[in-house]
Length: 354
Image 1 (cartoon, rainbow, N blue to C red):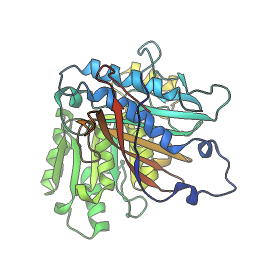
Image 2: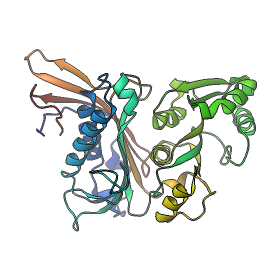
Image 3: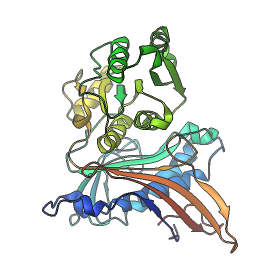
Image 4: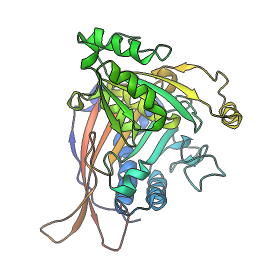
């Protein structure tokens, strides 16, 4: 893959000013913005297959580009959430070592989804993302590839305002009371799936507005932190790995999250035990899923509520460029940076990266 020229227009306070001088953690030695280069590479690669109807090809392009981009990072990284187990994925599988400094660089655990929304991408729908979360070794839950019951709310509410042990009705009423509004004024985001029919009916019986999304529940959870979306809560079942990624984002910007693994058969329970999970009915809180200092980075593949998608443009000079919009967040400082990139490419080179 070629090395493009990238212009980053960075908005946000200087992260260095927020750092404590006496802190010497592994995450301090990782350049936060370098994580964005990894998600940019995946997004640019996947974007060239938007609307082509081939989910597998789009995902494969994103995976390959992200894997190569990791080689430029001075880390001793380990994939804890990836494309599946070693016999299920050719690269970015669980347990795979990534980074350009094995045995030398800081030990970093990585959760990733090179293309969150493969169906979205194939159909040119909204909210497809390339995402990753990074934390010090042992700080991200090794979530098996099963379903997870998810419940999330944005920042500014009392601790414990949501609780998966309670019914959807009880949770809506608790959030409404904390917000000082009627339950009918609460807006809830839910994945549009047959399994959620009863949940949707219960919410609508309260008068709630229900925002249904086809795919992309990482973006759906993050939407609760953005007032512009008007979404107050996220509810429903989605992938457990995506739950960890979303939790990492909420650790950075604030909010609350509950997750509980859902097992459909004994094989899935065995898979969980393989990764050290013994409390199969446990309700995980935010810091159970992503603790310590962590970084969340995402780049838009298609336009969505969180980020703009990749665009192909011609400059006045005649050069072809791909433009990207990304966000990178850090838990220890609470800093959020919105980044626009311009990637100069050759028409004959399909997946450029920094």
